Image (cartoon, rainbow over all chains, first blue to last red):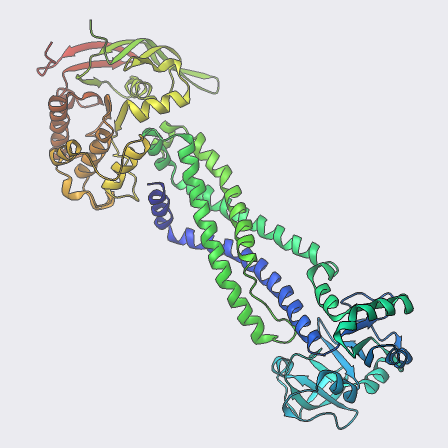
Length: 364
Length: 235
């Protein structure tokens, strides 16, 4: 019977209900989109890291696990590492940030092909000139460019020699030396990848290298991929907390305002229920149940909308902002929205409970 | 001697608005035996609505005692008055006061639910009351789809569904045309006679009051006259 009452109340003012559900859904979408973007970015980074085919990754002293620091490691270290026990191949790359989360990777094509198995070309061909650049198909779609075209990076027009399949370390590749020259980092690399003679030697080699190359950040690829997480992106966790906080505040005030209006509009009905002997808990229960239903509706709408945001973002920036659908966050975002909705309904509920039945019945 | 179902002694009610005090009831004494159809008449401000609200547990008295069904409701708090409304009394109002979003059936079921009774199906005895009220075929309509007379009959059905000891009717014909007013008054008397339902009705209308067994005239917060009608309760 309570459900019937709640449902009829919700259906009685469809526009108010719809607006409340939409407004509760927005913060749910906000949370799910943000979580989806970070998770998508991490997942995609992990896949690309795996695509290089290396066993160990090394970055310079003082670098962050995920930072794209400018080239700081002398490339002589690459040659030195190549002579270490169990190391079958050492390859340095330069990471040159472009904008946002994007970066171009400076590679030695021969070394890169040897370690990763080479690119699969969807269009065009490999590097022919120092001015050539390769992009993966996601980045080509994002920038609306194709093989044979030009791409302006760092105020320099690059010739797009080829478009490759995504999944190998980065989205944009240039040859290392032109990039080093352009970045003013001749003879320096940003990171070094090692391929070992046998995967069983990874842990032992990492331990050995850490002792010998003190200060360098040396991780097996498995370790590095596990470190690609929200925890290792500076400021992301506090940012997430702020977004969740905003979501809570929005849901709280939306429901509070909506239920406050509902209580005012239904003053007479509350009086009728009281005249029938409805206890305070019954009246409060009705208000909270209505808030719960609106919170649930908002959660479902927010989830649906997160698919919409995924589609929209993927349409615009498929390479830079991959958005995952993180199912585990559905109940969390829903719980946040519904918790805020219920909290927002408490005060209007108390107003309803406190209403004098005689005054409520006289309300026009 | 049989204890009256409503026993009122030296009942007083004072409303305070800022520094102004208004004495709505000034020492009312009244006994209503079980099964009586009792009418209270009086002009606006005479205190009849206040008396009605106190007997129905909608507001507490300032002084005096009100015993309803053997329980002194002047001594109970809000929770006690809520229980009185759940179990002992039911209301029929001038403006019908049906829940507008619900059908007639669901309005009745809501009252049953609140009183803690089964709501899945009506008892055969109550089905007879619905037939007597002439609304058995209108139960799946919402108030807006019904005439005033039909709405008031639904309100009476809702009030009777919980088998209250006392039916409190506040100007039940005040919003009805003459034909519907007569129909509702006849129904109330019929219900009183057939079911032995105690009814306390307040009205402006002297003709309507005549449908009861006894009429009390109120003025300035006091009972000024009590009269038997031609339908006096048999002793």
